Amino acid sequence: MGKIAFLFPGQGAQYLEMGKEIANNFARSKEIFNIANEALGFNIEKICNEEEETLNNTEYTQPAILTATIAILEAVKENGIKADVVAGLSLGEYSALVASGALGFEEAVRLVRKRGKYMEEAVPKGEGSMAAILGLDKDIVDRICNEIVGTVMPANYNCPGQIVIAGESSAVSKACEKLSEAGAKRVIKLNVSGPFHTPMLSTAAKKLANELENIQIGKMKIQYITNVTADYVNDESEIKEFLINQVVSPVKWEESIRRMIDDGVDTFIEVGPGKSLSGFMKKIDKTKKILNVQDMKSLSKAIERVIR
Image (cartoon, helix red, strand yellow):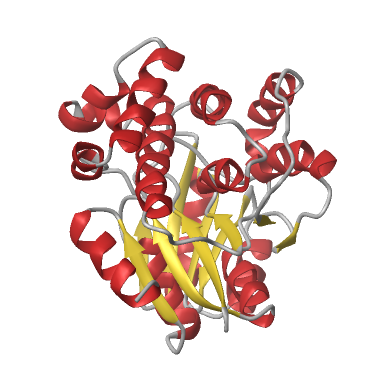
């Protein structure tokens, strides 16, 4: 029998009322929202359900996505679906760590709020940007970014034909022009507050490192793969350093998925808001069983296909 992986989404997956239906049907999921409200000192549930502008502010987006994701995870677990390995895209790595047992949820939700704040503050507004490049090979994107004067580099290797670049706004614009000329099918500027996963966020990484000094890392009960190396983390003492490096390093998502496939994973369940990771999976290997759980309907489908 093959293995099951839980995949957790990152920033950009948020939408109003994410996790609401699940929380209304599972007491433990509702409790996750209550725990987050108390840990954060404000009503994250209200933001998730009613305050779209606040929800899209990075400082609040990150704890909101983590909270909704873990609420959904609790419903998945309650229905007997278990993972052999977990991984998360960028912010989603914190959900993966909570799922693995390495991070407590209360500590994680407070930590990611600070992470979001530090990332947003690291680069003055307008000085950094990101863009999705569709339809070009990795080598071409890497080469053209290296040829541009200024700071621009791949930030997310999501799947074949989709790479996100980030850096100084002017350098990103120049790279977009060159990448279009090189044959990119589409070049999409992203509505984000900064050049995430580049060295331009080094101040955020340093502040996060200070926060992590006060965080207790627990024993992993489920294997976890980090964005930084696209490989398993076998020593809990390395986790903090990976989380610090992740802020300034590209997300090796496609490699992470292929590493799991090589290890015998044949069922991938995206747990949390949105379907972006399921979309990436279909481009990486559509022969695998690919599911997503974000509401009652998708939860029922996952139970049907995995448990029965």
